[in-house]
Image 1 (tube, rainbow, N blue to C red):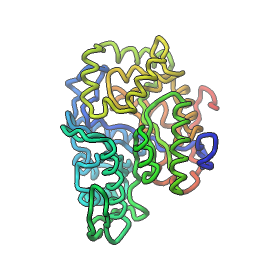
Image 2 (image 1 turned 90 degrees about the vertical axis):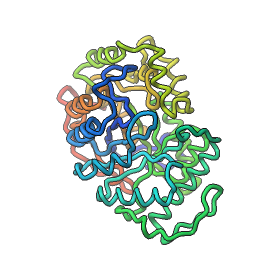
Image 3 (image 1 turned 180 degrees about the horizontal axis):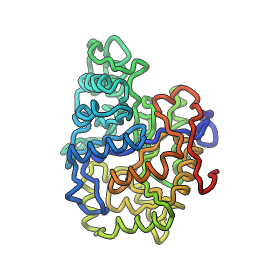
Length: 387
């Protein structure tokens, strides 16, 4: 990586990244945006099929998100599915405050052993269901929680004299399979406090899709913050994707999945999420106002998804060649992890696996961190070379 104080974003040494997918534990899998698909509601069987399809298509990691209004518990699901997987990592969402941190550290360590080290953790710091708290209090708890997790995994004792937690207990029961620091910690958040917690403690900063200039500015800011703590961090992008043989087909499918959209019903579905009013969602709403008449915030980045769902609100839309070129642009900016998804999830994973995956240098970020990525053979496109 380049100097975090550089005037440009961090760049990867090679075009190589962790290519991950999304498993909709939260009940949002559908054939049409803004419409609840009775055939694709959150169930163990449906989510199992999505995850195992993603593994068979070669994705390196898969995000198991956390929700409450609808959906399944990510850790219980992960424990059930883990023995059925062979290669894929599980990126399990952990909402701070739901579990006592030492017990959470032990649960994560247990799951890491079941997966034989194929575990990564997505730290979530939103409000708890039915409980509204001051944001600064939540981030203090988040900060202390991560410190406790790291002590539990890497020290003999957990010693914390914080504002939220006070304890001095043995750390023996909480040792993970990964003895080089424990599972990687992924983190997303737009506020000042969120950025500071990530820079101080976490391994990967996840951003939602925004114009490239905005992503670069965020990466520069996080790199400078991490440098204050003598740390470097990686960057990931959570984004939807619609890829087809041609751009016209991809754009037509984008219109198709919006064909049943009703603004009032879409807003109701979007507001079910605990992060519907977060700063990150508000930023995406503002960028969507700048879109062209077809909803494109910038070339190939379609923002209409944000009308119907919270969280990630835009998709890369285009032919296989265009999508790969866009992914390459993100890698050149310094993105080393991608979490893709599409509607419906299983079918779109298969299309991505066929059209895009063979042409991407795909590696696990847990294997890339701390060393220069090795060159990974990539199948060239027959339709022409990409820059």
